[in-house]
Amino acid sequence: MIIYILKSTYKTYHGKIGYFCLGLLIISSLVHTWLLGNIWPENIYDPIVGFDIEMFPHPTTPSSSHFLGTDPLGRDVLSMLMAGSRPLIQLSIFSFFIGIATSLFFGTTIPFILKRTDKIIKEVSSSLILISPPIILLILGTGDFTDKLSPSLVGIIYGFMSGLGICYLVVRSKVIEVSTQEFITASKLLGARNFYIATKHIMPIVVPYSVSYMLASTTYGILAYGFASFYGQVGWTPNWGMMIYDAITYGSYLGGVNYWNLLPPTVGFILCASSFYFLSISVKKQFGISI
Image (cartoon, rainbow, N blue to C red; front, side, top):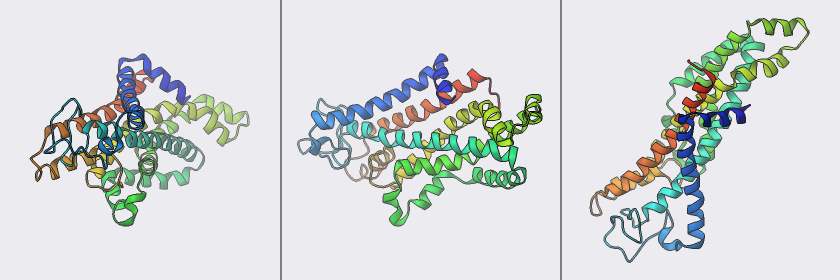
């Protein structure tokens, strides 16, 4: 069902834009791995420890050897930009699927089967909406836990928070609406168990709602990761937040801020967030979701 939904999103121009942006990020990540392994010398183009001793002073503007210039620490901006797409892709995938699984399972079964428990989960979900993900990442990213806060782990944390937060409430409201339909009553009269009705009859109806809102929530996860990476709270990994921080912090001491260091990661964040946002709009349009 989810695969069918994702395929159908390509029929709208919103979906085409979303897939195009996402495809650029995936291709750039794969090309970066190939370039480092075959063409680019690792000591110059490594996104973390690379340094070009022939270019001075850093940062430098775009040139034939560095198409987007170098940052204040002498690293190639294009290499950092391409490498920074990989952690966000990992985060997005984990966040999306963890959120889908959480919202569909709990959002479908609990309101329909465990109605007393649903009252408690509803309050928990409402409280999760008020918790700012960047604040959570900053708290988790302090101390020795910083090196363990990988993009996939951030995706799992954010996916669970989103799936049990606003996405749960959206799915829950639709489940309550569908549970009063005549075909549900007919299924009960025919002897179908509540779990069977919830998973076989109700869940397929609410899947588009979960997919749409998790795609939208993933954009906030991307921004939250960028916010945390700017402050170095997500471990020592190539990311666009670190690029912006280094350009501002070290640039003020080493020759001034080069705007070629700020524009690429900014465009990267826009492309990554826009891809999931446009896919979310496409799902809503394809399935007539108005809430």
